[in-house]
Amino acid sequence: MEEILKMVGNYGFPIVVAGYLLVRLEPIIRDLQRSIDMQTLIIAKYMNVDVDEIKHLVKKV
Image (cartoon, rainbow, N blue to C red; front, side):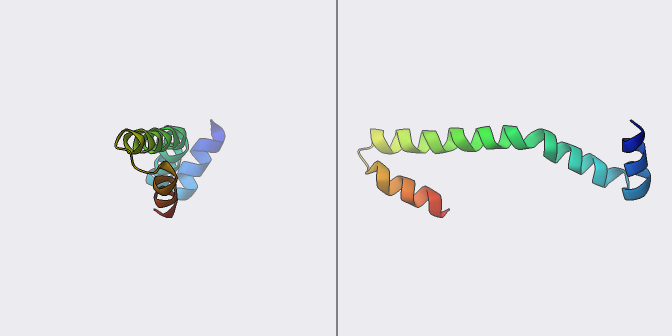
């Protein structure tokens, strides 16, 4: 707790809050990205599009 108060004093409240939120939300964002990639592949397969071509396109973005 003392370290957090020291950081707030040195760097300012907004920077500390932004850092905390980034650390807390990173796993959620990664899970969402995996879900979006999986849905893209499922839709591509359903639409009879070459899945390897879609994987290649997704990696470029």
